[in-house]
Amino acid sequence: MSEITYSRARAGLADLYDHALTHLPVRIVRRRADPAVLLSLEDFKALLSRYAFTPEVLFEASSVAVWLPELAIWGRGGTFAEAKEDLLDEIDQLLALIGEDPRLRSAPNVIERLPWLFRLMYAENNGEREAMLFAAPISDERPPALAGS
Image (cartoon, rainbow, N blue to C red; front, top):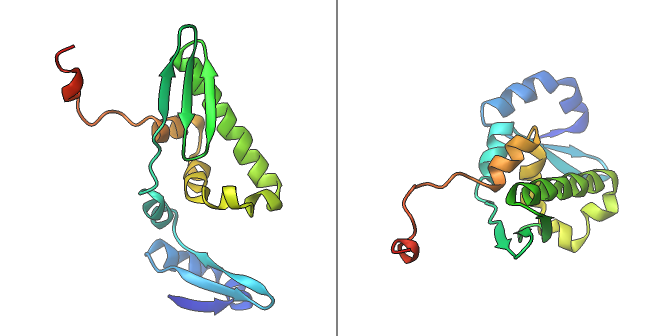
C-alpha cells in the first residue's frame, strides 16, 4: 500500500480519490496522529461483507422479540413487523450514540462490534439496513427437520 503525508494528500485529493476508485487504497500519515486509509466504498463493502448478521426471532404468547447477537441488542413488538421496526430504531439510536461519543467508539465491547456497525453505517436508509439484517432465504425449500410438518 502506498503512503502519503497528510499535506500531500490534501493537495492531491482528486488523484487519491481516483486511485481509491481503482482499488488502490492509500495510507495517509500525519505527524503526531495515527495513520488513516482512503479506499473506495466498493472495497469497504467487500471487506465487511463477511460480517453477516444472524438475527434470532423469538415468538412468545403475546409478543415477538428479535435478538441481534452481533450488536447485543433486542427489538420487541406485538408482531414480527413491530419487532423489526423496534430493532431498526435501536440500531439508529446506537449509531447516533457512537457518532456523538468518541469514548464510546473506543470501548472494548464496541470495538469488537465495529465491523457490523460499519456495515450498518454505510447503509443509506432503514430499508437497506433491513435487507442486510433479514436477507431473503436462498431457497424456498423447507429445512429437512420441518419438511414433514
